[in-house]
Image (cartoon, one colour):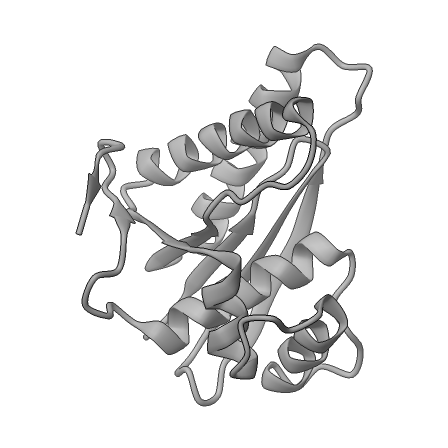
Length: 172
């Protein structure tokens, strides 16, 4: 495995992290968060997410991109906004010529901690240790993006992995 971009999409904050190396010794190359303000019209917020993520893709040229599958237990407006942010993130990745590898939260937790029920604090410590960092990654969206990238590095292309191809259609 080489460079992997992990993305944790959200309307207010989209976290991203670029990891490099083997699954047994990954390195954090770059990370950040794309922020949009609630008072800004939706089309401008989506455009900003797309443009900034496209710039990350161009600057770091990852060989693989991984995103968390959407899973919600919150209100519908949060779901709608996050799905729209995720849509422009998938578009940016597809325009860069990459497939989107999806992992549900339980799979990410299981790949990193051995338990699909790991708490956020435990996940952050595992990410910190796996990447040899002095501190936990902040904000949470960046730590989540790094966890998704680590999950992809550790999972590889396992049989049955769900992939969205660059045309947006699913395949197994």
